[in-house]
Length: 179
Image (cartoon, rainbow, N blue to C red; front, side, top):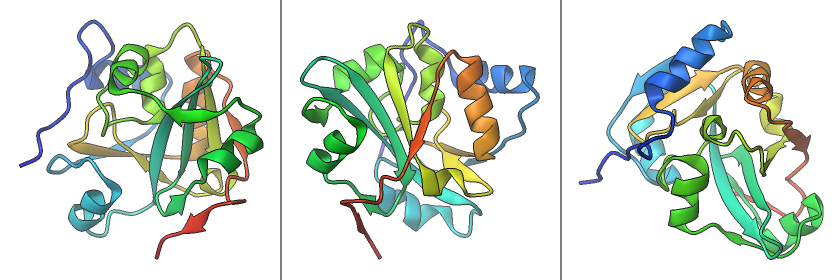
């Protein structure tokens, strides 16, 4: 059985996240479900949950810059192509210790909401442009046993309130869509 993830002690909790969203009058809807760690597990458990389902990948480049990239769950990124698209040095997935120390979450719960734990604003946030055209997008709210639906414009407002300046770009070039 998959274990539910927890937030890193001393960093924002799911309650902190929802309180901040409420402070900015940003509406969300959260659904509880068994813990999931992969897109495939999420698909099998979510049923007809409305909206675009997303995945977020956390990278470190060769120059120690960090990149949080969010896209529709069926996109398979070519990391070399992504590096060229975003203008970074060679990318690799961030180690679990970095996920916890930089984002305050465990692998399996990475989402743009985790930028609440990055007041130093040293993580570059990239959204796929097609994702941001959706009416509703779904992410884990710092833990992997819930999914939170939010309007993409409201998500951008939240991230800006946290001091981040997300960039939207077409990540579809050099990717493959999974059926």
